[in-house]
Length: 142
Image (cartoon, rainbow, N blue to C red):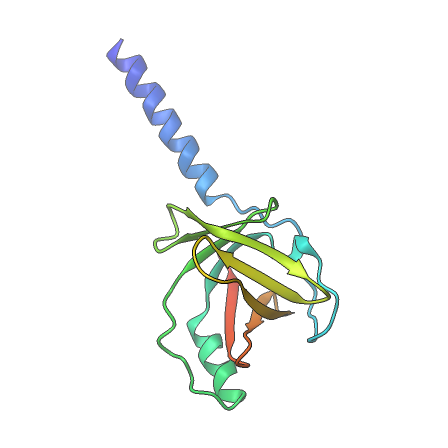
């Protein structure tokens, strides 16, 4: 009995680890320019904050480099839910996301007001520009 229980527990743990590591990217986004029409499927998947690209993009735009961007893991689900993780393993619900207009991504935290970002893609990275013209760049998590 104990061997069967431990085998079942080990199998379940392994299955959970595989599902956590599996990518759920639906559609790779082509490079886009600000104002280009974006599809919801482009956003779905697991994303990581890219500190280097965020810093360089803000520097190129005339802002501070924002090199203190925290490493975060975001998961945008097909149903519009938005999950976050600080480890990349255990995600928790953070709110909702949606597209508005051609290229505006709206992130609505469970608490707080919605934030609007102008979204575009370059080399499979997601560039989000806020209302202050500052960038946050997300790369696909592997």
